[in-house]
Image (cartoon, rainbow, N blue to C red):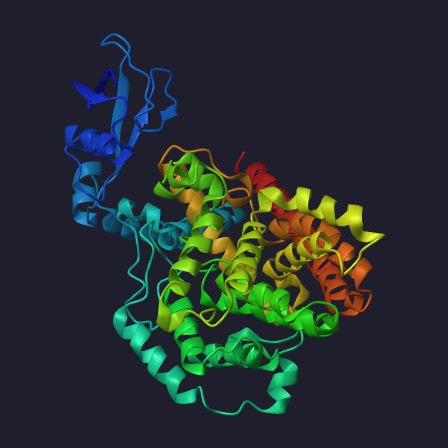
Amino acid sequence: MATKIIFFTVNGRPEKAEFPGDCPAQDVKDLFRSAAEAGPHDILKLYNPKGNITNISPGLEPNSSSCCYKLEVVAADCNSAELAGALGFDLSSMEKRLQGLEKRILTEAGDAPAVVYEMKKQVDSFREKLESVEHLSWLGLFKDLSEGTHKPSPFYHKRTLHKTRKECEHVREKFLQMSSLEVSEEVRQYLKTPTFDNWQWEDAEIMVLLQVMYTDLDFIAAFNIEPAVLQHFLFEVYRRYNNIPFHNFKHCFCVTQMMYGLIWLTDLKSKMDSEDLLIMLTSAVCHDLDHAGYNNAYQINARTELALRYNDISPLENHHCAIAFEILEKTESNIFRNLSMNQYKRIREGIIKCILATDMTRHNDILNKFKSILTAFDFTNKEHREVLMMILIKVSDISNEARPMEVAEPWLDCLLQEFYNQSDVEKLEGLPVTPFMDRDKVTKPSSQTGFIRFVLLPLFIELANLFPCLEQHIIHPVRKALDYYTEMEKALEREKVIRAQTQCAADSLTD
């Protein structure tokens, strides 16, 4: 492989980098980091001669000294004092000066003009954004949220936040203490409904509820699953979900609980065999194992290890499957260890198909396949059952809006937090920004109205065509959610118009 020579400037200083064409991406980034004398946590951006951001990777096009790239350190570890020295002024003294000017206006004018209030509002909004977006903390304005609060920081990094050993052992101990408790009949019935509220349950209690699902569907007896092995399996699953805002252990539970509810609501126990039901429930439990909080588009654009390993083909879903069977390879957590070879082969194949079906890039293909067999659906047809199983896990995976608003809306906040974090990283790394994740373009209602109208409802309606009883359980709540977010979107538009009119009036007063 030929050596690439890249010419670039750092703060006006000409530099040259040489590396093999097959050099790992991280080595290339480290090479540029060294040339820029940047720290390990500093953020670099590389610009081409046209001024466009270019991804630092082995794919960089060779150039000449007369056509240089430009390398800049756009984010570095620094404190406010260092920033003040770099900028030539102190932010705190400027803030005091502005407060003094504000008091003077109030004293001399009696009441501040509308434009002052509007500017104050914009400054407060900008400050809030700086303080709540971790990747802007290099500006020196980042607020330490750990002070005076016991809430966990809402931020996370590209390095996934694996649970600590201490955290896991504490939850494991509580789970084992509670695992032999008898769950009341009232809770067992509640667990079978889409209205179940996950926010009222701790992680150890959630594992007990997952154990109840395996028991109540008769999997323990049918597949000779030892209770201790099931408990170890559930703990390992808990341990391998990361502390990220949305794709975490509670999301795993919600998807599994919805799947469990759908099995009971549609009486699938009388229509499908136990192996199919075991496939669906276990797929739901494992469907997002070790999710890092960055979607497939990011994995592929950033050329991550997962994207390279799986050749850009559903990198996340393939990874979730691999982690699931890594857990199941261990004797102490292998709930399938007493199955025959043929049973294991069928169940493994089914779980892989179900988890891979959660890749939204396959959404239309799977939905269209389901539509094509719907009019002549036959539960004795293996292919028909497999398509239905994929539809059921897809519905379960994106079913939050079928839940009561007080349960669903906090999940949307968690999802947007994860989305916004990804788009922030994409901007800083010079990657294509995922449009529906951009915090500067997406609002809570706008993120939902299109998704509900064009993804959720078409999918849910087709499933309800096969099972009309689901109309009241999942279609009606989703329609209500669509109305709710549509009204919220209209209200935001009205507020935007009023704000623009206020600004216009303020401008006319200052002219």
